[in-house]
Image 1: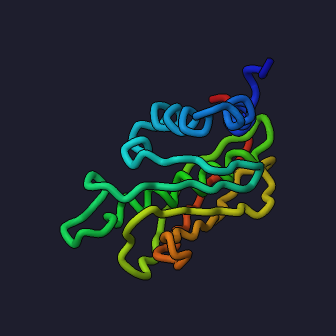
Image 2 (image 1 turned 45 degrees about the vertical axis):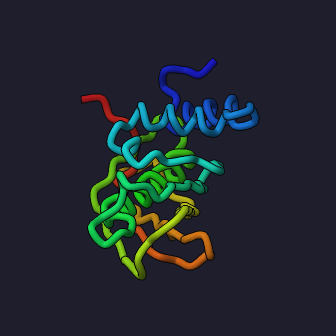
Image 3 (image 1 turned 90 degrees about the vertical axis):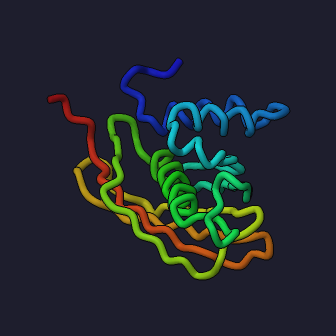
Length: 162
């Protein structure tokens, strides 16, 4: 049983471990994530891999995420980068800590089309004091070429009661 003081990462990790090996378990986890975070759910992210400090998430190219240039919209790419950095960072947090995005930036390197995969490895950080940390996600197309790089700045620190 998970305690009420457990970090969001502890809770997510427990759900991931429970579902990932089941048939359609990754799809169910991804759907659950989209329900928990409705705006993120709008891109239909599919979580492939999760571990403390690591996330790999895919997004299908579909009409709902396209722009007028017939490529994936810049904000859909940013959404994919943000959820990927957030998952990697959240799963690395100890109990009693939390994080919130305070800044987002993106480099768009080429038009994004087809199945896209974002990957983030979050460097170790101290969550016992409130501090800002930048986490990066590379977004690749099916050929493996980086089409965009997201940077999310997260304010991470201990939960305070106010």
